[in-house]
Length: 134
Image 1 (cartoon, helix red, strand yellow):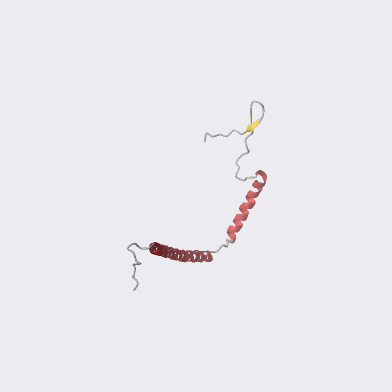
Image 2: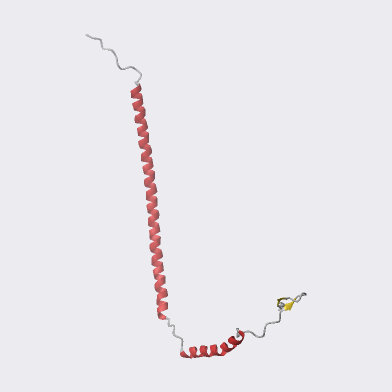
């Protein structure tokens, strides 16, 4: 009979060592990918919560604005902009009384004519002297 020789040595083969290294690297990559996925899920959940808070804020603001609008609308609808006839007649008379003065002087509130211009040492007009001792 033929002799059986040992094919398995105490040291692992190079291919087996490379295979174990690849397997270890694949496991580390899978763990890293799972950790990244978990982190992304956490971020997505937080973003979803923030979006829900923002939507709730929008609904609250819209409801508040609708209440304010309805409050002001009711006030505007209830008010009347009709000016009584006596007030209109008074305003027309006031306008007619002051329009003649406005046409002459340009300003019915002026009390007196403008002061004369001041001449400098060379005879040029430089403006008006203003009394600031009031």
